[in-house]
Image (cartoon, rainbow, N blue to C red; front, top):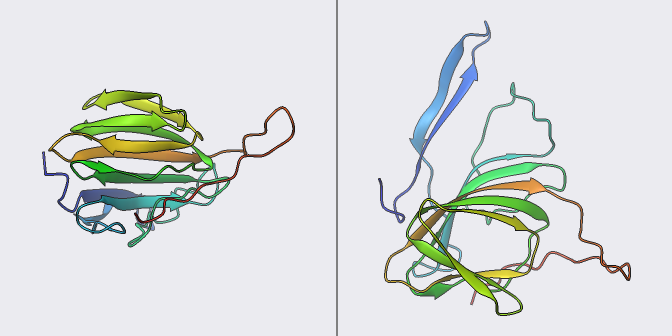
Length: 168
C-alpha cells in the first residue's frame, strides 16, 4: 500500500459516445496541505452537486480544496492526519462515512469524550462537533464519503452551523 504522504492514484471509468465502457483517466491526484507538511492533507476525488448523480458527467478531482459537501450532493475524498497532530474542532453539514485505511486516529467529541479507530475500522459521523487526534508516530489515512445533510435542529429551534477547520 502506498504511504499516506504519497499522492493517491485515482482510476475513473466512463462510457464513450457509443456507450462502450472506458477508462476515462488513471493517475495521481495531488495532495492539498492547507495546514503545512506536518498537519492534515486532503485529496478530493469527486464532488457532485446533487443526488442522484448523472453518470454521464465526468468525475473531476478538486485540487487545493478542503472537502466540504454541497447541501444536496456528495464528496469522495481522503484525508491524511500527520503523526502527533490534532485537527481543530469542527463540524460539517454532512453525514460522513469514513474508513481508516492505515494507522489509527482518536475521534474526539466537543464533550472531551473520545474513541480510537484503527485501520480497517469504520465511522459514521453525523454532523457533530469533533476533532481528529493522531497520538501516534505514524500517519493515519482515511477514506471518506460525505453526503449532504439537513442542518441539525435542536428542540428549541436552534440550528447548528458548520464550524470551519482553521489553520492552527
